[in-house]
Image (cartoon, rainbow, N blue to C red; front, side):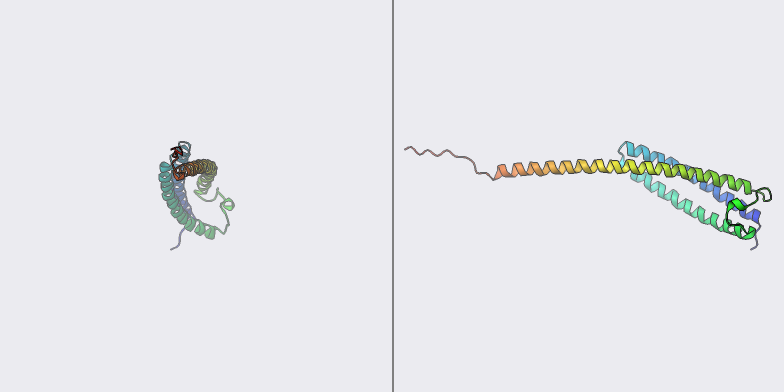
Length: 162
């Protein structure tokens, strides 16, 4: 099958538009995770993580499709990256550059949010761990005091006068 560079660009643009849409959904899920972390909603956080994984799998499939057409395009034009393509000579090349630029911006924003969420989640886990240790310590102390009270024999008065 012999395909033209224009066809490859068209398919790469289609894949990029799908990826951009998925990334927009992903950023919304990431923002929802931020809210779940702030509200201590661990159950909601788990559900959102599952939804994000589905989107990530979808994006990976789109990336595979994009890679096929982009590799074909690079082979046909004899270039190594998108910047080497002359946008004035090839229909759709400028649009492809624009959408990939938008994708990179979204990825940067998602990465920034993910780092913030990671720090917040880590702090939340540290707080929960401290509370659990505090409860365990209190329980241990309570058991120590109650156990010793239960082991002492009752006091009896012995009347030695008779």
